[in-house]
Every structure is written in C-alpha cells, then in structure tokens.
Image (cartoon, rainbow, N blue to C red):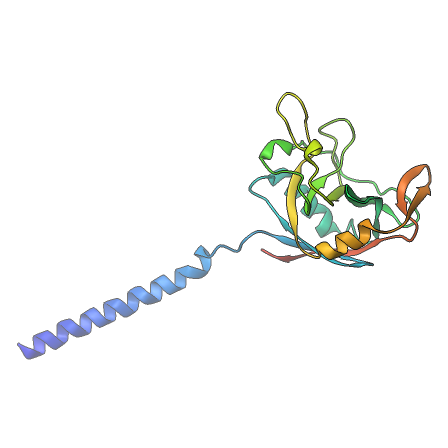
Length: 200
C-alpha cells in the first residue's frame, strides 16, 4: 500500500513538472512584443515615437518602409511653426526634395486626435496624397482632426514618448523663407537617422 502511494505521488510530480515545462516553452511565443518605437536622432536631440499600428496600419507600414530604407536619414525639419507643428521627412539640408513612394490612403478617421506630441502625415489638399512627410503637433490642433462629411483630417499614427523637450527646442528656432518656402529654420535641423528601437 505504501509503495503504491509513493508510486502515485511520483507520477503526479512528473506530470506537474512536464506541464510546467510545456507551459514555459510556450510563453516566448505568446508574449506581446508591444508597439514599435522609432528613434529620430536629430541635430538638436533625440525623439522617440511610439507607433499605433492597430489604429493606423497602412500609415505605420508606410512610415516604417521609409525608416527601413534610410529615406529620412539626412532630411530636415523644413517647416517649423511654434504653437502649431514641426514638419519634416521630405527635404535635404540644401532644400532638395527627395522622391517618395506612391501616396497612401488617409486614415485620419481612426479615432486618434492631433493632440500635442502626436505624429501625423502631411499631405496636399487631396486627402489621399500623403507620402513621406510627417509632422509632430506642438499643441492640440483640433482643426486638423477628422470630422465625418466635414473635414478629411490629417492621419495621426503615433505619439512622442521621449524627447518632447527636443520638439519644443526645434519649435523655438528662428525661421526664414528659402526657395520660396516659408517657416524654414535658419540653421538646418537635421534628422541624422531614423531607426526602429523596439517592438521587433
């Protein structure tokens, strides 16, 4: 009887150990790696942006394509308006516009707002014309938000999670008119590199 008891106990222990081992082996696959983050290393400091792939899948995929291609490296923030936004991702320091990929559909109706610290796509009056250029909102810009049947809006696809002080510094630089464009920083604010730093 005692031998039977110990034999059963041994079988239970082995079963428990096997179950734990299987559970542990599954955990890495089940773990949520979280949203992707991109670091913009600029001549005035770093900015880390958390991308919202769930709300803006097309826009995030488009942005990451440019990041992975190194498209943004060496571009500038070419349009800077304090208490509004800082815009970049399309021109080099000598004001040469880079050739982007085809435009994407406007995802501005995704529920995200153009609040301070969010990143959104720049575009022409055509709602579905965004390519590479983006902007970071320096304040809450309600006029840029999507309103059904009234305003196509500007698609927000992420937010600054580190380096908002860098955004503030960039927004405060002196600007001028260059090559027929207004609000261009007198001293170029260069995006030295753009890299995915997490969520891979």
